[in-house]
Structures are given as structure tokens and as C-alpha cells.
Image 1 (cartoon, helix red, strand yellow):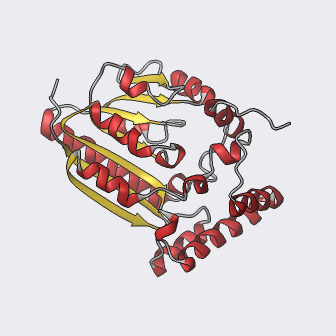
Image 2: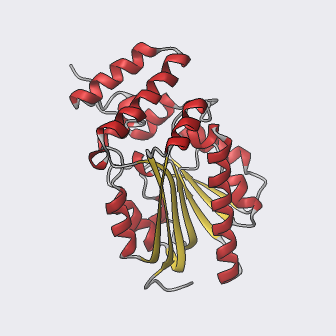
Length: 274
């Protein structure tokens, strides 16, 4: 008998328990150049809101262990963090318990932002969209709690697979396997890859439901930009190379490979300021 599907927040904790090392498998955390770029971009967005409104009230969706929260706070923002992993929620709560500028929300359903009765100058997602089945609806929800003139920023999501060349996808997957082979447990990685190639998804397997980018064929960055263009005055898309191996990260950068994207939308339209 098949195992019944488990709630995604439960599976998140199975795959990413307390003490999980996010840096090891996250290029935007492991590679200094990428991490610095994301950090500098977030700080600049906070400063833009201060220049515009004299404040920066930020919603950070899926904050993980707070890798970028510290930088938002250091830039002067007040930050509402949402997290659906119970262990990450507990870690964040403890980490920011004495910081009045940080508010941590357990988001079991993914709908917390719409239920807070609050509004934000900036919404931030780092490595989040590809975990959300209907990310276009999520973008509309976040826009609904963003003040007029506010901004949205998302970093570190995989480019839409159907629009990528076979060579591009092969380079991306090859780089992943080189990194995985060096870390061990190659068999688990091969089994997961075979399921992906067959289009077989196990709703009781945390790898499939939490880290399974191929479930959604990456993220359709063009559809995301089209959605944002309906809600914001300007939209900026950046495609870049991102892989776990530091040496192959450098190679991909040099030859101009692209596997990942970031998008920044500014000037939320048609929404009253509080």
C-alpha cells in the first residue's frame, strides 16, 4: 500500500532537520561572490525604500535559518519572517527573540502573509519560488500586501527547463553529479534522478516534494515577469549560473552558462499606502 502524502512542512523537517547545513548544497550561500551579490542587492532595495518612505518594512518568505535576515536588519529594516519548517521556525524564534525589529511567523499553509492584516514595503524570497506549486498565485498574494510604490525581489530559482537548450541542461546536471559524487551517497542521487526522468513523484518522499525542482520543470521566469508587469511599474530579470561545486561555478561563470534567475519588481501599482 502506498504511503499517504505527508504535509509539506513535515517533509521539510525530515529533509532539513534542526542543525541542517544549508550552506553545503546552496550555491548562493556557499559561494562568496553569489552570496555577496544577493546581500548587496537586498541592502540596496532596503535603502531604496528608506529613500522613498523613510522606512523599510520587509516580508521575508521562507527565511530558513536567517542567512539574509541579518543583512536586512543591519540595513535598518523591520522584518517579518515566515517559515513553514517547525525546526527552522524554532531556530529563528530563538535567534531573534531579543530583536524588536524581527517578527517570526510559523506559516504552515503558505498563506500567512494574507492573514497578517499588515502591509509591506518590500517582499523578499530567496530560493523559495521553486518550492511553491502555484508560484504565480503566491506572487499575486504577496503583491496584495505590498504598499503602493513597494517592491518584490526573488533570487535563486532554476530557469524554466523547456526553454533551455539540451547543452545547457546537460551542463547543469553534469555539474550537480560531479558535486554529488564528491559528497558521497551517489546511489540516492541516482535513484532520485531516475524517478525524475521517468516523471515519477512520490508524495511521501521529502526529496521529491521539498527539493524537487523538476516537479515544476524549474520556474517559468517569463510567466513570472509577465505576472509582475501587471502589478509593478518596472521588472528586472537577471539570469546567471549557479551550481554547488565551487570549481564548476567558476567555470560556468567564465563561459557564460545560465541556470538560475533573479527578478526584482519595483513600483507596486494601484495599492493604497497605509
